[in-house]
Image 1: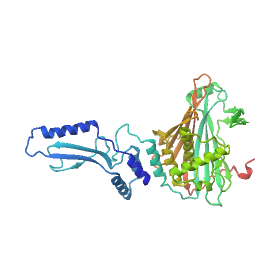
Image 2 (image 1 turned 180 degrees about the vertical axis):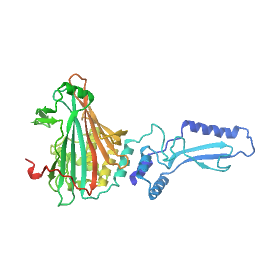
Image 3 (image 1 turned 90 degrees about the vertical axis):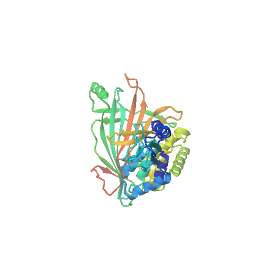
Image 4 (image 1 turned 180 degrees about the horizontal axis):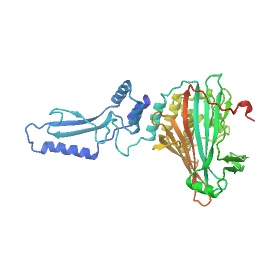
Length: 432
């Protein structure tokens, strides 16, 4: 709970409002200057206390022993206050308090929710650091037991129609079923989910184009890293494709962290479980790959932070790492200065979550777009990674933006078995 305690210490309670302070001073002055209406006037103290960090930790520990629900703890973190941490307010009144002439009342400050002790200010919202640290604390408690680690993702993206007059939205489904046992294969199940016009405006332009059901893109020449190559032509269809399963090599790559850095179960098992060591490791990976000519050099400042952010998010979203490593990735991202809070959002699959964002820029500082990471407010598990990129102008319009996303439908360890389609192939069929 060290990180939860750190978050608590960061979330300082707000000071009393100017109105409350002014009323307190006025009543204090009045108690000394006004003529008493009865002998021996009573002076009553109404205190809303601010507990020390140690007391807050003790209160939280007592809550855990009582079985306080995780959602309540997240709610307290999310709005920037803890139930036991409230501003110190001293209000002196003359006369008799409702509880008796000598009573001392411990009261919630104005604008506080008595059920949670959280601020009711409409502008109060958690910072990016608070969102990510709370997610780390929650995700560190997730189970690491099961026959398979499964990661079921729906990804989507927009692309310009071949005639350049409207946008299409295409989607894919991908399931990775990885087993730690040597005798059980790892399966990757994929399916193309089809394409359609992205917006009502695009649908009108699509109809004007004859309402096609397929779109063919010719190959194009691309220059990258001093090398030039020609892409293959491809056809996008409105209809969904069949489910296909590919058996992966046992102990082989489960995905790429950077170009030329396949992440095997062995490598994933050695990832550091602290944010500082994890960042050091990722920076060493980038430097090694840059020396081999596979990736650009790390760079400095904001651009370097963006690359570390990308790698941290990939660890959170895609790989079968331990809960501690996933939590370390959240904490590492929380330390990056360019990450900001978005707040409550709806992800591409219609689920509610809390989001943080980071601007995407070139090495020269030019804006390319923005990334948004959405996490589940209760479990801390990732919901979606979204990217909006600025695109060139299309015919007849000032410009537009491309949108892509990865939405996680299920992630973690399970005793379930993969639902394999009839269409299967293995490593020996890769060339076929």
